[in-house]
Length: 455
View 1 (cartoon, one colour):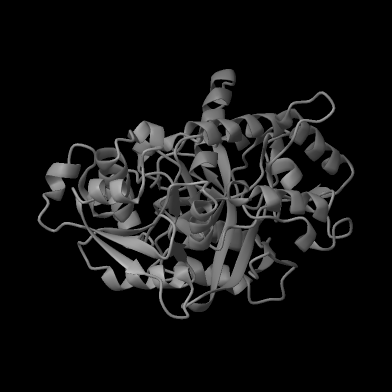
View 2: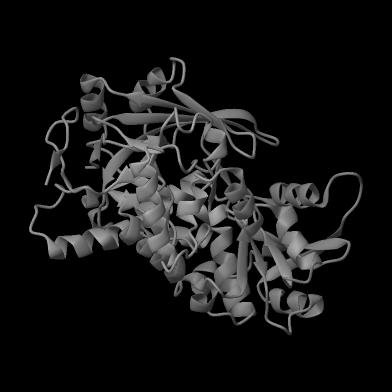
């Protein structure tokens, strides 16, 4: 079902850029304004200059990104592989309370699929502004600048073993990100291994874990290019997207919660919040006590209150306490949520937050919630969400348990989509390890180990 093939990647030259730590970043959408500036200062060839471009010399920001990337290629700052390869990336990391883990991924070209095919399944809704932004950047640069993150089911470990075997030798390159995650990087060049991996994915369904906006942008560009060309589908580079593929059965896959900060409405104060929330939730207030951090106390309450079939969230509105909201068991969830969402979506805390608390209780329409400049801000960091409230930049921090992997699979399998920013896969895939150029135009070769042909 899925088409996964090797490609000729674009990577930083080890002679021109020997230290990858200076040039790689997380994905564009988790880089704060402060980190953006830091990355720019870190190195003139840091990938942030391209993924978060700025206007320069009469060029708009997208044209400037394309011009800069072309200059890096001319100057051999970034170099093009001379043959098709797969790449293996490992990320060794730690999460408080979970210990040390390692996640392995295969970087490849994956054929873009329409949702109706059931081959590549999204699980989150996208927002128009970031989708259009990534489309404009892709159209200008004609390069996949970062990998979308895809999951595949591999209960017998057959693919994982092939991937991890390649990582048993010393890495070709490595980097340490700002969170302390150690990333290592290998190439797979053996034609038999390339062919075996391509065949192994042929019967698989893939789930989009991260990169929904970039995937949607790539598919829009594909459709545009197909209207302009007469080539058969699947034979051009724009029919594919660069992805990092990881087994969802791996213990190295970690999902963290995405929290929300609510910037309005202006009338929302603590007493009004409690009164309106009480229509649907049992609301309990807890004071911060003891030596544990505020964030840890909230996390503990959320963990301890979680039960199968129960929906809950926490809310912080300043001061020395927080609220725990538990959906009332007496409510008819199917009646309340059935019109707005189907089946497995009703089991998600994030769905209840958006549909019952924000829309029904507070009167904020779903479309307004999805707007980039709307009432919500997103972060994986409880302290940051609470800090926005303390700084009076938000009215309330809305805090969640992580979405479970089985819930993600059930929603995707049903052809449904969660609210935006429902999952935070950790660690983020590093941007800058390898890029996927769509130009110069290539005809996708018939054999995994063969060299692409110029069009």
